[in-house]
Image 1: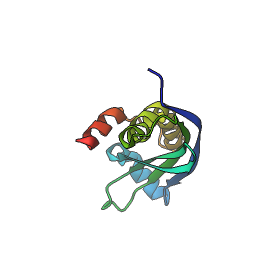
Image 2: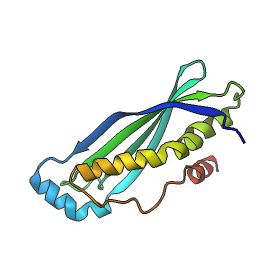
Image 3: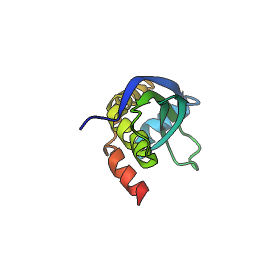
Image 4: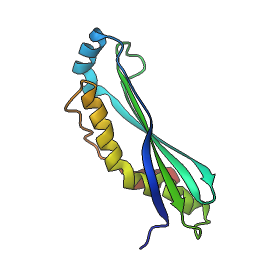
Length: 140
């Protein structure tokens, strides 16, 4: 089966890493295993059949915790959609499922490098993100 899209390019659109001071850094080093990974996807039409797909990863502690670090990355893919794709559901699946499945391994590697380079080595996301399953759950 041929894909109905082509990823023309991908890049880091925005990246943030915040740790306010040494005390917070030391506190977070002990507690980072409790941090949660959140994923958001949005898109917008650029021109003709070109779409910007943004995948935002946020890795943070619960809001009520005062001493915490915050990590976020927006990874953008410029995607050309096949002109034959006119069905809204098919377009939605490409944006929310197919593109993320294709680029996520690279994005995860970049994000883990950000965490490591920020002084938090050894972080691994135990649960692999299955965008196909997330899309199915969203559709139900």
